[in-house]
Length: 162
View 1 (spheres, rainbow, N blue to C red):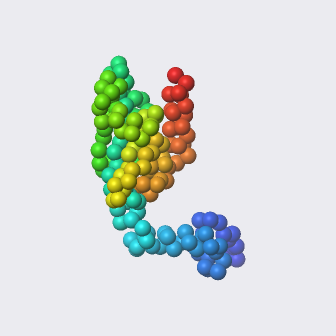
View 2: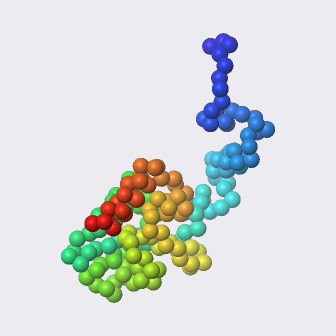
View 3: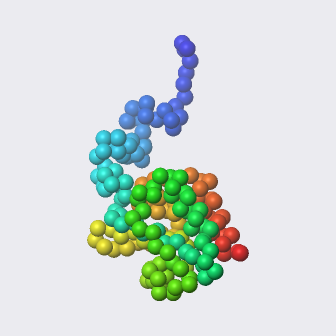
């Protein structure tokens, strides 16, 4: 339409000249452009994994043989997100066998919640994540939605109450 004016919104910030953008917006714009070209200055674009060389998913089996509901929920979320190929190993922390690998990993890293992830980098140092959306963001360079974060938090809180 002729004569119509259009206000700029965040969605239209790409249309603004560089001089009108703040330093953060210019940085974000350069990162997006580099990602499109496959030229990010760190390994996240090349491997979609940030620093990780191995990701181990540790899930729990209770002493009565039942599986951890939160572990099942997180695994389904990993499948939904299409990230199953990013998990190198699945280890079970079985309460019926206090010497199994999963229980040993929980002891070693002083983790009391399940599920958790052990991420090993190229220098063989390990980092533990007990919240999936943090792993997803920091290791797989993928952002989680608010609803997904809230559901994981609520499931964790309900597990502590019941």
